[in-house]
Amino acid sequence: MKIAVAKETRDGESRVAMVPELVGRLTGLGYDVAVEPGAGSHALIADEEYAAAGAVLDDAAFAAADLVVSVQPLAPAQIRGLARGTTTISFLPVNQEPETVGHLRDAGVTAHAVELIPRISRAQSMDALSSQALVAGYRCAIVAAGMLRRFFPLNMTAAGTVQAAEVVVLGAGVAGLQAIATAKRLGAVVRAYDVRAAAAEEIRSMGAKAIDLELETLEGAGGYAREMTEDRAARQRELLTPYIAAADALITTAAVPGRAAPMLVTRQMVEQMKPGSVVVDLAAETGGNVEGSVAGEVVRIGNAQVWGGRNVPSQMPGPASKLYAQNVVNLVTLMTAEDDEGNGVFAPDYADEILSGSCVTQDGRIVHEPTREQIEGPAQPAPEPEPAVTDPSPDEQLDLPYDQEADQ
Ligand code: NAD
Image 1 (cartoon, rainbow, N blue to C red):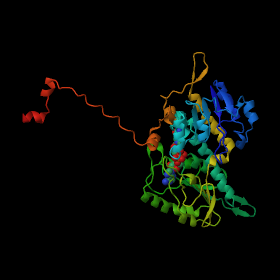
Image 2: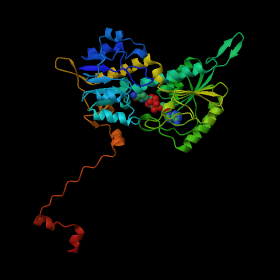
Image 3: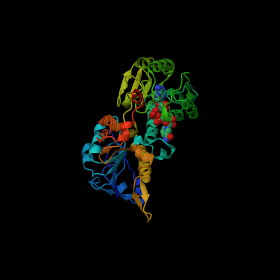
């Protein structure tokens, strides 16, 4: 049984799906690990480190692989090179990449999308959305601190006092809470807002002040946020305006599962910020929380520099790769059973909701139903069986509906 570690091919992707220190966990399960040469180079991991950890460096790693692990989805040419029945583990944004899903289906690949792993307690160690959000949230606070031309902390000196920076964080999920914690560690005064009921307590537990807009909370299934109505969104923007105008740095991280990012801050709101202020929009790639932000660019709006995040975890490829690789190892461990001699065998149990929930394609079919419906259209109802044409028995002829009976 062979696991191949892909060299990422997408522009700007610096992470790698496996790190040398975790290769031993896979070989310990009984797998051979083959790494494409150069796979770790952007994350500053040399080929020799993989070799020293027990992996084989192999240009043709995919050819005989039973399982291929990558961060981004594989390219069409890579997918075509896989044997039917190969399993893949990667991020796979099914809504944005129907063509990739189609390629995986047509190649007979069993493709797992890590973002579809159910967010249940048992799956926390495999939750790549959380591990990468942690990196992104930290990075956002560091970017804001780096762009702001003033101190984050309060400085009391013999010459006088310099006030701490005021930071506002919108969206306090995994990334937002990490941004809050990081900005707090750097000494800023942090205020934060989130629509979920539990968020205020979580914000306070990080040492920040929870902004109370006295609006109803918006909680959907599984403790996630719901989409706002336009009325509610307008009211929220109006109430947030003074907080944003007073902020030196604004960090936005709000998201609603399966939807475009909610637009929380208009251009007009940014225009009210002070000279030198900075805005960091982590959601720029998925529609943006801030009107006018551009993913991967810094744009000027009014007095503010607005930084739009683009593949933010990739900007810290070392720790992001390590956390992702840990998620992968835990998922592979779940896919591994023991044979009678105690050896590990690759035997995913699709009765397990973690594996069935994250599986997108299998045996030439799209098995993730919402994705199948999006790509292939609504399921066709099974054809009605033709009624058997037989002569009714004399008893059936007498079995008439009630009203006909009355007519007799
Ligand atoms: P996310 O990335 O989907 O969204 C980020 C945050 O944006 C969320 O906190 C959300 O409430 C907030 N948001 C959405 N619309 C908003 C709006 N209009 N205004 C302000 N904020 C808005 O969320 P996430 O980081 O994945 O976490 C969401 C929840 O799931 C949290 O409660 C988190 O603790 C929980 N969670 C559970 C598990 C698990 O059980 N395995 C794992 C990760 C997260």
